[in-house]
Length: 95
Image 1 (cartoon, rainbow, N blue to C red):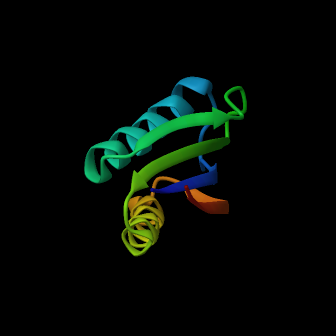
Image 2: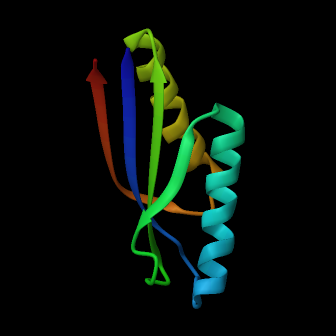
């Protein structure tokens, strides 16, 4: 079994309130979850208006499949255009 984990630190431009931030984070989380069938959640910086940290996790039986899916998730989030990716951490764990 292969587990892929992504941690993305996002900058949310133009966000001046937690309500505005939450609407952007919700959009990213829900679209990513429904498109790729992965677990996604905001995992840090919940009280900072212009930053968010999103975690994604997926499991599979083939390392190439998991790597490819992670690359597609990164491209998808970047291509949404509602946030900027400041940093990304990717881990692949073989169990």
